[in-house]
Image (cartoon, rainbow, N blue to C red; front, side, top):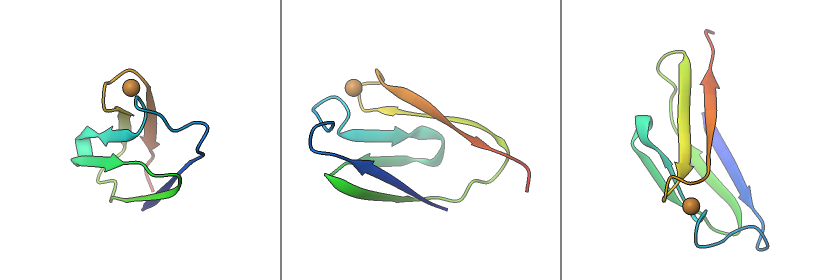
Length: 65
Ligand SMILES: [Cu+2]
């Protein structure tokens, strides 16, 4: 899948400018506008992502096809 993380100049800062999706070995430095992250969800589950400091996080929920 392609995950497009859109960042506006007002919202991008030193805390949130690098994203980790550890379970998929993804580390992505975010730029203003579009940031395409490509990965293949392998099994259903809840996968946490966070900023590089681990302060801001969210989850991706993968469901059975
Ligand atoms: Cu942070």
